Length: 150
Image 1 (cartoon, rainbow, N blue to C red):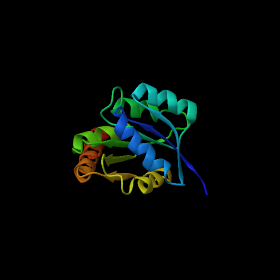
Image 2: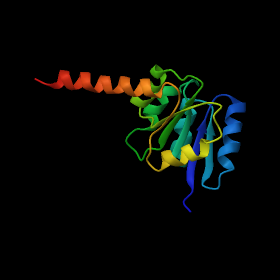
Image 3: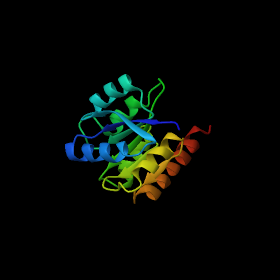
Image 4: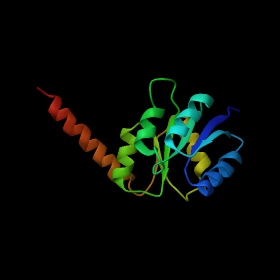
């Protein structure tokens, strides 16, 4: 069995501890590091080379800024955003920054399956604003295509 290496980045100690407990209980996954800020997440990921990063959208230096830094040119982990914010603007911002998934905090029942799916190359959008976010992204792509035509 392949073990999926995970870093958990959240500035809330209780949330981070709960995520570590849930992820660590799944034999397919191993938590290789934790972080309390975007800068710390980037440093921990550089040191541990995880497959997946659970990244809090609203922590200091987190969100799109950290996602862009984590999904840079080196072998990059899959960034799975986690947030209490479920609006399409937040989802779109994270997807544009390189995240391949977005989950609502507090939805831990299927968390490990979703982490595994992201590690396998799937996109996971498990938030109420997902459909609106996808429509917005597609609209942006169509608009960009129109401006690229001479």
